[in-house]
Length: 346
Image 1: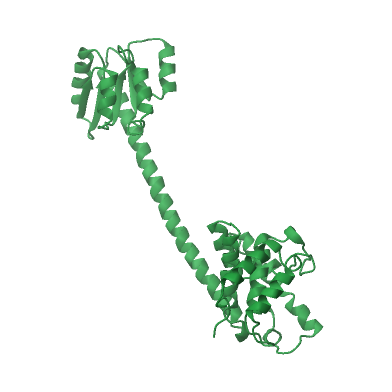
Image 2: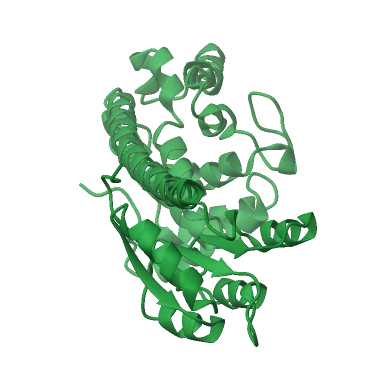
């Protein structure tokens, strides 16, 4: 029976007669065969050639099969070529040592034609199967990453849509969520957080005020001082927002920004009175970014503050309202913004 798929095999054996016998058997099965009589020549050959399989004699002078295989394993260009040992030994110790060295199989000498061809092709097909599987896994991984990126783009589009709906409730805060997200990401980057964290906090910033969807428009846009009842209603928006976002089970931490961005570092904030590092880092960052944008933007009850006044208030609230570490980064960003561009624009 002639094998349908051809292959290339290197046979290394110091017995020329063994080389001739093995070559003749494999040639009948459509296999291309190269022959060498010592391990040193085999290593030189494999530096520039990559056959599908090496049939390697165990006992050879100067450089035996084990030495040859060790030399192969030490060279990246040939380390993954499968090896079958050829031996006339009957003891189990040789096989044990060979398998520990990484041999795929053993073939006994003198050769049996059927055993030689079947074990040879089994090793080749197994190696090809593993290679194909690795390629399929890599392809599947790239497809998954492409799908993940598409999913992330869709999520970001939804996030932007939702944040736009929030800001649309109050013409005085139009663009607020996007600016808070940008500032929060800038602070996170300066604080040394990785890109994954920066992207997450950007989304959290975009959605930090989503709970305001549950607050009446007349309260949000009231030009004068809020009544005690109205202020309490405003204070409910973090809890409302957390309730909305907790349903996004793929991103359970997404609710952190909405839930706790009005907590204070000194524990006097709301809704839960968390203190210091009890408050998630992303909420502490968003708290600074949120307050900065509120002060640097026009509101229904006042015009935007000067940059100097904004800076003074951020510095004054460091350690009380704000985490001092993130407040200091915000102060650095303010000092670098010599033209006062980090603010609401018409």
